[in-house]
Length: 294
Image 1: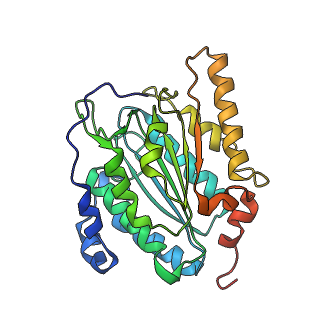
Image 2 (image 1 turned 90 degrees about the vertical axis):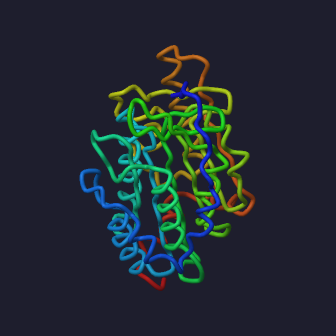
């Protein structure tokens, strides 16, 4: 899944810091409709807000981005990710998603602008006292290289995202709401050091020195996301067990196909969410199925 193109110059990540809740009406107005690229981000947010308001204090926000147009696996990953969580919390997940590529499109293009907007909007859903018992789950799936993720919208596009820019995009999610960040890309373990936060759990498809697999042009899913979500979420497992099972499934598949070196998926758990990482999915997600106020 590695990108061999040279990474382009970094865009200014400071802009995301200026996108605050007070500017939300202008932010929504700036989101392009992109009708042929799925439901607009503005429409997604309105639907997500309606779900969040019904949920009350406990809000589950799913944010997915298929960042490279060269493989259908990335769009497939976002869809599989959402299906797995919707099966557990059918009425309580607020969903935002972006995807590059015209085939099997899942949402508007994953541009630098729309990625900033998606995470800013996600942050508003769990901000302040309105949602103290919330959880954010993010999936980023793409080609990757050390410190970078591809954001190519077509074959001749060299767009890429450096981890320092990604860190700024994620900043609106805050430093208190528990956040599970899943990154399926080659060398994705290299992103962990700059994305670490005490409230964050990070799982990656590969170490900082290895490729991951399953991103051929017509693939259904990457190996890693398929291993994590293809059978849904086992309600009896906690996040650590879920990750370990997924990593083992990837290792078995790579061995059977004689793919070397092994991808070696990674797990990092912040100090404030260690207990959460050991809580079974049924207990972790139960508040999002409870009536508001409970």
